[in-house]
Image (cartoon, rainbow, N blue to C red; front, side, top):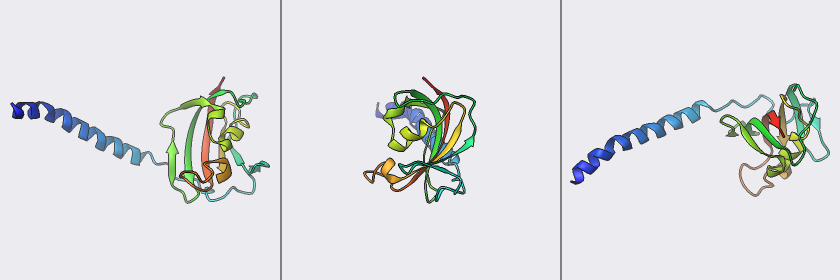
Length: 147
């Protein structure tokens, strides 16, 4: 009886193991190389009084900006200043602007639909040294829509 139960579950176990290996390989293949200016904002980046630096990579098509209570849909990739990618949206992500770190709250409100912008977010506007990743974070963010 034990052998028949094991034999019955073996194909499912094998399939699950193969799936995990494929997912891990796909995740490694999805690492996005860091931009050349990831270590520090370039001299042509806009800098706010809070310390947020940003640069438009692709101009948007809209004229309206999301507010702090808007719901946005974005694509993004995040790196540490040593070039390690630590976060990425797999397709799109939707959330309310006021639900994210302070650097994103400020930065998203600068954007218009269709715009892709790079943010250099100092630690005080990111995780404030309370969790990793520590230090300045760099994000490429594309604003797809907002309500």
